[in-house]
Length: 328
Image 1 (tube, helix red, strand yellow):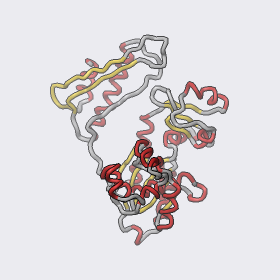
Image 2: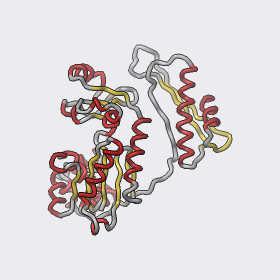
Image 3: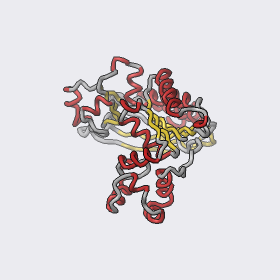
Image 4: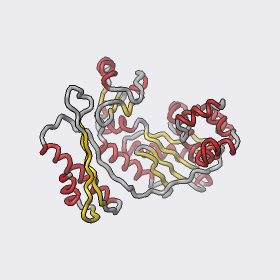
């Protein structure tokens, strides 16, 4: 069986870990340039604040409703993510970290010895006790079904306690009839529109389509998704691979006008990238440095440029990478 463990409102939950007084209050986390909302607590969602809400449009509402607004802190979120994933990896060696806040876990043969629903509740409680991060867990015979089960667990926490298992055909049909096509994991907006034009509006209706139709319209990838939703595991666990490109990008906390201030940031970001390189035992041969002015300050002249610096030899040395980045 597959578990899909998803951290609830992850960025907002991270802020609460280090400031418990935020519990129960509406929280919004903004994007790199403080342009729009990229994370919202349940309380913020209840106020009607949508994902991607532009800050300048909702600034008045934030003030009126006393919404706590934070600039994104990816160093904090990355550290908290690693803590959660390290805990999950103790339960099974078969783990696929799907994103910063979710992971697939494969438990083969566990259902013969454990009540998987109770086991998932134990995992959920331990993760929260050890990190302060609340999670929801979906359980099913395939990855796509585990995704849909997780959606149920997160949508109805009062009745599911944050854990939902699809272990019968009746449950599978009920959940797939509830999930709309645009909300199916792996179906983008283009495919969703195409399916709706063919009178396919739910995940169950998609799973009932002929194989030839799905393969022709959505390639073999769409066919694997269809089989996964039918309860036939077709999307396999992916092994962690070293990144081909590593980046450290941030918005500055204030307006910088001196070269020395920007150079100090470049040194810091170069060190972050070098540490990531060494962690995966890799070297780099090219560094790209890019910089742009604040696009929201339309009253000022805009600037943006990137420079690629080819290194004389492969390296993961912080000193070498920093020196070359400063040249850029």
